[in-house]
Image (spheres, rainbow, N blue to C red):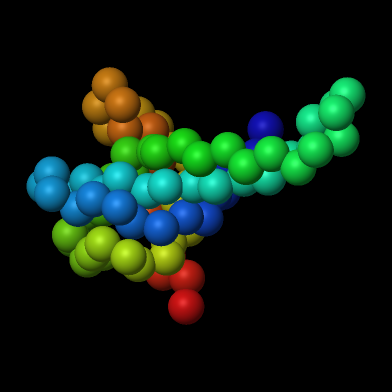
Length: 78
């Protein structure tokens, strides 16, 4: 099964080696046919504390680093 790759914006970089990424996705409601925006925050592992607030990044699913951290930063989105 392929790993999930998500893109989002860094909203927090306070914890050491961790960033919080806000991922927004859009989908159409099956009955109402209305476009709905969903926002979700993911904790991602950032080994070198390289990324700061406002950066656009790709995160990829990986082995669990902790209870809530199951993603790793793949690269910077420019």
